[in-house]
Length: 383
Image (tube, rainbow, N blue to C red):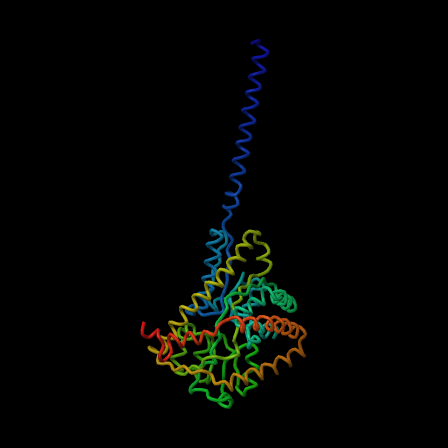
């Protein structure tokens, strides 16, 4: 090999080494890039629920936050504070919309004072639908788009998710059993949403209070009666300490669900992958919440009868029928006053007409099976 060839070979080897070294450095930089982003730390959000920390509803809020935190591998960390930690329960919408809070957990009926049509997602008979069917209308029947339209009409800067179908709520807690419509007249009664108008129409003196304030108001005599939601919430909030009579079944809140809210600007700023994870976490939390509710509510229902000596009574049919009649009057009045209210009612009616007929024709009457196994002469008692 000549001297010239030797020098050319050396330059070629040196060039390859520089190229490989550069490629290695470039590759290392590409690998390191996510670590640099990671070093900036996770995204943190401060939330508040509209529930006291001891209520199972606040537990549901924590459950959702944990799902998101786990599913994002800690890249998004949601901290959930109880009601009143930053703002009052009824102030959640304003706090999230303004960015005082990054998000929150509550119910649409708590925003009734902002726009009455918001209560159509939780107050009333839902035209024969249960809470899961109402959520179906929300996702597939146009409800989601109507809710966005409602929020836009009041300038709310929020990203809303509805989830968590609630079982039918009790008529409430009373000093004595309610046997006829006249028994409700003159009672100082707590409820929220369109139910305010319904019970006012039934002659009650209605006071809307957040969940955490009801029992103390009953204890001080500011309320004669009240409704909240379910056996677990009612028990832990202390209803059995101020009343021993609970009336089950009502149309005033036959189908309700929870709301998860994000400040919209902060939600939109999240990476697309993170927003997709939140979408899935909402549906996972919805299923988990409904399963947990069945387990916990049934246990506390028994405990209130045995340990707390609470007496439960079915609300008489004439009261239920009167609720439906007054609800229709209230809806007619509000539809005439509020075009968005009318539009939502029409959408719900169309969806309910189709889906409730399908359900009534398809789903077997489980009462027959219940009586077969657990009735007075049920075979289940002998197994």
